[in-house]
Length: 237
Image (cartoon, rainbow, N blue to C red; front, side, top):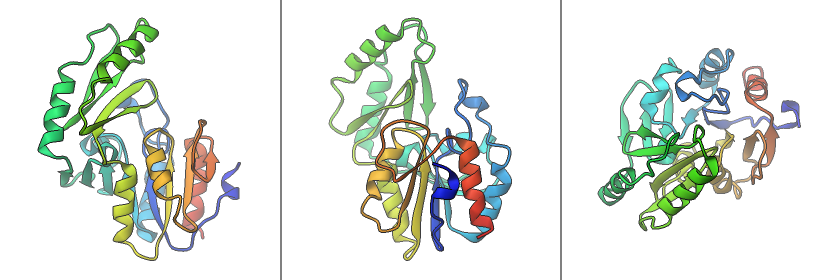
């Protein structure tokens, strides 16, 4: 599938993931610089349409890569705010306490790295010496997961989040603020499936999975190059 095969709604609201969508996936998250064309393209897009960055990162972590104060959703739906601006955590005290307990019980194996994300965290095993042993240890770790939490199994990463909060719940909430707009959601990871599923029953919604993998999204694109090519059609339409 090419970008020309995917429709361009006349009145869109754009929801764009960052890692793997606007920027290539890299081993070091601190080096995940955006596609060269993305910064200028985002400026033009926001001048024409409502636009939100929807990411699994803490929104403060995107300030190194995105210069403009775009509205955004962070931590897979647990944050709402503005890049370079105010950020609100959407998390209960009970979930916060449960996350803290989980953080202190992460398996201590060589190559397992804990990445702080404000009230939550991610556990990466990309550099594990024995990946099979790391996976087994992490599965044992999440087996007694508190009822207020969910686990996300991503690309060589485990993330724990409050139950009932996701990119999907965030997107549906934002759509209510923009009646009459057609959602366009582009993302590449497991957590983006929550948003795709939340938009399944929305007429004319454009949901795009970037990269491979099973998906409920209606369309596919190969990588950030294709995403930029597709989004560029919105500034000439």
